[in-house]
Length: 353
Image (cartoon, rainbow, N blue to C red; front, side):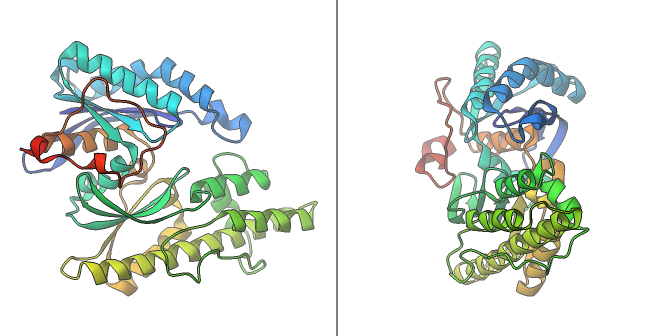
């Protein structure tokens, strides 16, 4: 039984998750407090405000998660907390709280890589077996990762500039659609003509599995400036054309990634696991469904509440690590950057024994 704490960006979250000996997981509670209201006026997340909100709310969120799980805090076997990557102020709030709890209760501490939380969620929700391909598309990350096992990841491609969620946010801000940008752009795009503007598809002619959205974002800005002042229909058409471009980019790259998976792991059933808030975009989801049908793969998308930042994914990643004998010292450091494919993600043979 694991308490998971997540404070890497603008959600304050805590969860109680149980992993049985067979590897099956059960979410006993999952409490998330969004900070959208605190940041709405600024059109994006303000790190200092986010950290202050975590300080104010985290104790209450943990207490609520424990209460909803019907347990006492002393009943948990370990405390797991995001140790990075993320906004360092927020990460420090969650990790320091976890250290204090682990020390005072005499429990194990597991410092979780936020990206590993996303990578392993499908094993909690859908019982997915290794290996599988993860497409992570969120406000801070856009990448393909081959998930071979707990702590064993190969990064096949990523963004060379903006993350996809960040691009949505910036386009939404440009078009005065509000924050968060993803849902706002998707909503207005339904009223637009996606064929009106032919925005670029950066890197799409190259075979590497990388993304680039900066040039696309610039093209959107230039088009908006050329049409200013924008009518409501102009805004809808720009949003629809932008969404059409990113959907084609994501679909094409996913097809290439799945073909590589089939070539390099011919004995494995190809599975594409999608994580991150952009997974909620219906146009992108529909395009990915077509891609997996064409390639003979399986598409796994956890419930949207577990695709965005939450404590359950952190608790589950902690449970998976603890089941393999891995835990961390109380002096483990918080990290603003922490790629999944670094050697320290691997679980040592000594720990596993």
